[in-house]
Image (tube, rainbow, N blue to C red; front, side, top):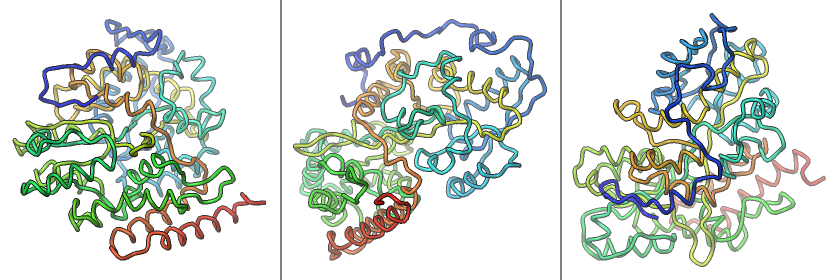
Amino acid sequence: MRVSYRSAVLLLAVVLMAIPMGAVFAQDADIMDPATFGLQEGKPYDGTHLDFLICCNTAPQFASGAVKGAEEFTAMTGITVSWGNIPFGAYQEALYLEASNPNTEYDIVAYVDAWGTNIYDYLHPLNDFVDDAGFDWDDYGPAYQSASTGNSDTIYGLPFRGHPLLLHYRADVLEAVGVDVPTTWQEVSEVAQAIVDSGMDITPIAMYYGLNVDQNLFNWYSHLWGAGTDIFDENWEPAFNNETGVAATEQYVSYVRDGYSAEASVAWNEQEANEELIQGRAAMFVGWWWMATRMVYSDVPEVADNAAFAPAPGWEGGVTTSYGYLWPVGILAQSDDLEASLEYLKWLLHPITERRIVLDAEDPALDTNVAVRLSILADEEVNAAHNGLQGVASEVLATARTIPLIPQYTEVIPFLAEAINEIAVDPNADIQSVLDLAAEDTRYTMDSAGYYE
């Protein structure tokens, strides 16, 4: 399914197919009634203050949650909550330090899926909470379930902010050169060449290969998985440097090597690449769906009027499998206010709250398309408000997966990110040799952790 923000047609078939059995919304429920969210009556935690360890609290989804919490949750419970605002670039280090600090001031924590593997021991298990609060675990897709549990039986955090990868593209450019929306990475190259051949003054695609918190791996994963290989084999031996992995990597860096992405993309992060799209300098971009609103609200009329989105491409003759990136939210085990924190999660993660946040469009600073529950991604009103974007997300998440959720993988990530950057920067770099060196470093890390004993 492909969706244009200027299209008047809502593709209800996909939306309705995605609705989980038994998904029910209390759309007319009293949002100021504690019973609506299963909160305890009588304000037993009145006067309690909670600190939420999180970055980027001006992100519209976070900002909307904070505003509603201050106005509604606090009125119902007497509990106040302060949201942190640690810069993303410093957040990983702050997360590890605060999670392992027995005297930390924080109670609630949100974390990137890959980073969670290093703080699981410091998180309060939420299995009983999910059962007691009546949360529908099946209302989350497989990738999000995996990221919340570390592929174990323990729920360490619950899905809070999730991102499927989408193809963001200029509908007018593709129409002008007479090509269909690409569904595979190989077709991306074909479309890019058609744009070049047309003589249009626009870069075909904005990719991002720079070293910036492993962002240059996001699209590489879908190349790798789609082609039919993985980071590790069944014995935890590196597999990304096999013949298939080399071919996948060759396709991934071909966009800059073949001139379809600007030379500067070897240093870009995802937002810098996205800026090329929203400023009208690039025709395509593959990135997280939260960036869709940036294209829709672009100051460049040709961009805003032709903003369109489709699932991230797959591999020709293979599968379409992309990274389902997730921020779970949990509670630090050393919190002195565990019960009050659980009350807050009841409200913050309730489907009614999530639905209201994604429908909050009155203030651009609070306008977001981000939701994680399948029932909300399938909700007709939500899709109508965002011209079917959530239906596209459902399609992507049906086959999305997560990265290796082991503590050692955070040590491996720099080897992979540096290898991809080196291959992109140097057009003469031998892909096999560079990946082999990264595999050696990876194997040493895994061996040191006892994986081959």
